[in-house]
Length: 323
Image 1 (tube, rainbow, N blue to C red):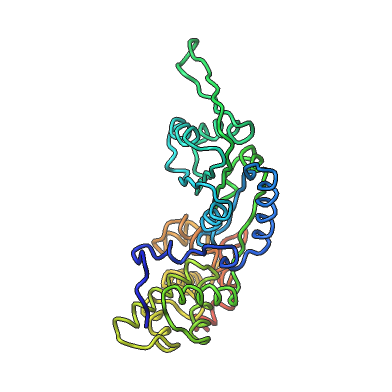
Image 2: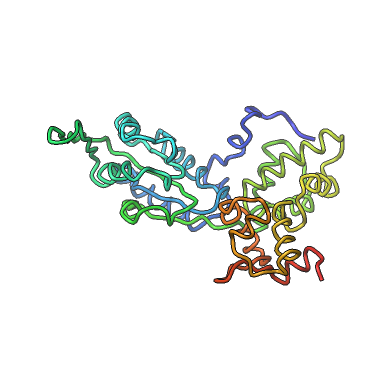
């Protein structure tokens, strides 16, 4: 049914594409980034700074790894919350070698004081450090090696305008994936894992994957586990059983998604309902509803946001079999 894969404990890393040809979808980003990298390479310069944004699981980190691999540069990775002090950023930047790539995930969570230090580092290649306090304070300016900053965020609106403007290489939004694109991603992942899937099985996983490659790969791993433990062939029927066990329906809705819609329809007659009220009624945090649950329900046409609150659509009534 499947074969052992090297680094089985790190399947997400194993399933990452190693070349641009393996990276499926996001063609507009790939084409623009290729031109930027090729032009910089021909001039023998590091590429300009690039920002990627979009919902989780669409491949922002994967693109950063691909850029490093394709350019042959060293990649140093960190995240916004991990850079707590100016000294943390200074340590990262001063330890870079010429041409290195620094990748900061969730950059919107950077402290504002750290952002102020990052501006001249990105724009002029210098690091301004203030030593001491009060009248005796003095500024030391350190020259930094030429480097490329790649950054990713799920909430681009939280980045300050000055920081966004420093990404001179471009700001790119990753789009949700189509079912045919997800089928290709699942087929590639299945090949890497040594899993045999027919076209119907591929489609069954793809249509429930919430337009997200990370979710598609997660479902593929879980249905593999289900088939292995139950000694079943990995066919369309087995996949439906495995996803039903996970609580995933034919729309890709989770139990939480269906619970929110059910509460909205059953308790509030379909709405409109304010976010705080819906949060209290469901027991889910407002942030979870707004950032995790609602985007996919809206994308699927099951929920609407209005000035008066959330409203369940006709499609939601039909999907949950409400009259």
